[in-house]
Length: 99
Image 1 (spheres, rainbow, N blue to C red):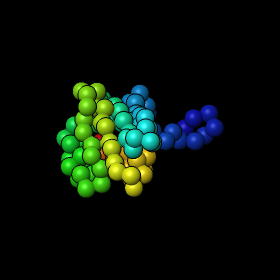
Image 2: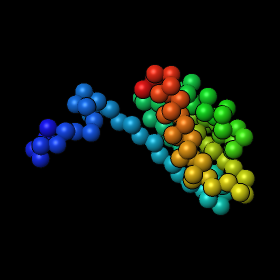
Image 3: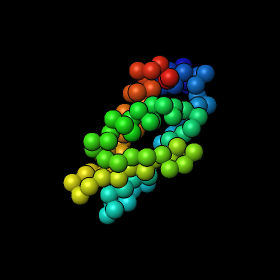
Image 4: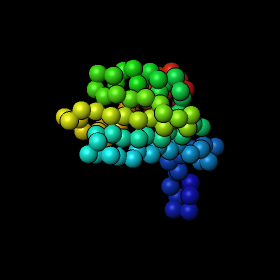
C-alpha cells in the first residue's frame, strides 16, 4: 500500500515497464501513424492484426521502431480504427500469452 493506504494498480516488479503507444492523425488524408513500444509489443501479434484488419483499412509497418501506417477510405473513422488496431494487438498478445 502507498501512503494513502491504496494498493498500486501496477505490481511493484512491473512499475518500470513502459507500455506506450502514440497515434499521430492526418484526418484529411485519412491516415494515422501509430508507434508501438518495441520493448513491449510483439511483432508477430502486430503482423497478425494487420492481416485481420485488411478488410477495414490498409496497415503496414513502416519502420523497425514499430511505426505502423494505417489508412482508410472516405467513410473510415481513422482514429477509431487506429485505437481498435492497438487494442487488437494487445488482445492477440494476451491470447498468445506474450503479455
